[in-house]
Length: 46
Image (cartoon, rainbow, N blue to C red):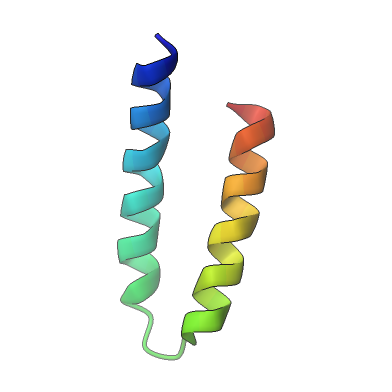
């Protein structure tokens, strides 16, 4: 069960990452910082 939840979270993060990469004005450092925040929030709410 824990593994399936982890895989589900990774799939969601991958979709978010793909959408963020589509933003033309987003800098790679901004994208990385945003992903760190998302991972931090995901750690405590999932």
